[in-house]
Image (cartoon, rainbow, N blue to C red; front, side, top):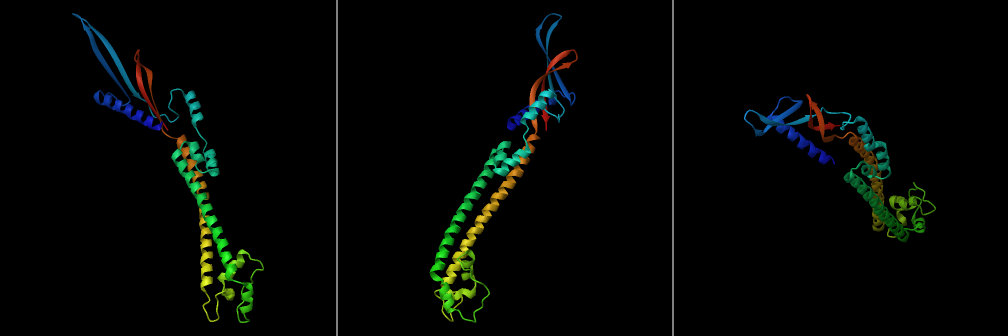
Length: 268
């Protein structure tokens, strides 16, 4: 619709420019009178006058139409609420843009929302799978009974191992040297970080990385909600104040005669 308005505007301005260039009499109003001779007699002429009046009204800040009451009613019907647009996009990113008539941006925000939650599910599922794997690995290659048998009074005891196999339990047996003797491949005089323990820590770190990625997807989704809400409110606000044009025909008095006028109104 706006594209059609702009085309109409350029067409009307072109007409005004051509006429003004040929017969410019003043900047506010131009009248061209063309007299055509239809017949000729010995001492008289029959003359037909054609008057064309091009008027470009002053910029109307309150509207476009010539009827203020009708214009106000029409404007009230087409105005949309920024608060409602923001609320819609807060609930579902892109919904406020759809409400405002901005279909491309609405689709973009909705696509980002879908991608964020698809990513969250992907990384969460992968993290849960890795957690199952590294816990099974620890149960196979680390033993609390073995650790109790191998430790001596000189070993540091800075942490208390939980009685049940909680998340903290699986973190401590790989993270702290205090529990290194519980690994199956540990040997006296050998390295603190045995191959089994090293593989276990790599699995656990990869699991943590997947959970971090899932958390980032959640943050991306929340940020998308916020940005979409702000954009929807701004889009509606801008739409309510957008430039509008109207091209029509008016009848104006020029002296004692009524002449047709091509009128162009612009409002914002």
